Image 1: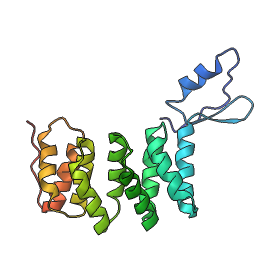
Image 2 (image 1 turned 30 degrees about the vertical axis):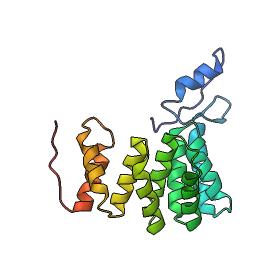
Image 3 (image 1 turned 120 degrees about the vertical axis):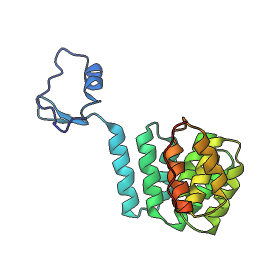
Image 4 (image 1 turned 180 degrees about the vertical axis):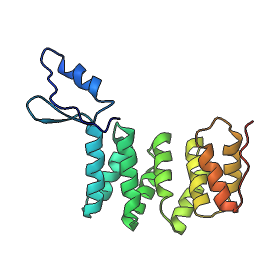
Length: 193
């Protein structure tokens, strides 16, 4: 992405949607030939709004952040909502996450995201919930539960982390390696199989 903002752009004679689509990958904001600023990345605004909401202490923040964490079409907004929710660090935020898991209605990808977010909290209830999700039928959920338990320094995670390390092409392998090193307090050699 360019740090330089394009200015004095004229869409005259061009399809406006195609023109903005062409600019969007390199520029979040441009200024048109009438001096108006045009926002090209709406997801950035949603992410910033969610972070501001969390910082404001709004009574609805937990509910809204949980919704966007699971339902926004943009992964960056989902991640921002997750960071903001875990950043709250409140019992209400933790309970909202455990309640979502206890409903039993989330698909596997959403369960994995909630388990990952829950890993940002501490306490016996968190460890118990993460431990239950080591038995989830979806490996993504199991992996996030194991990583969360490792973060909580629970030895039960070791077997699961080793299983992740055996999956050579798995993108979460570096996280598992780091978690295992932190948990066991020694550094593993980097090897390729």
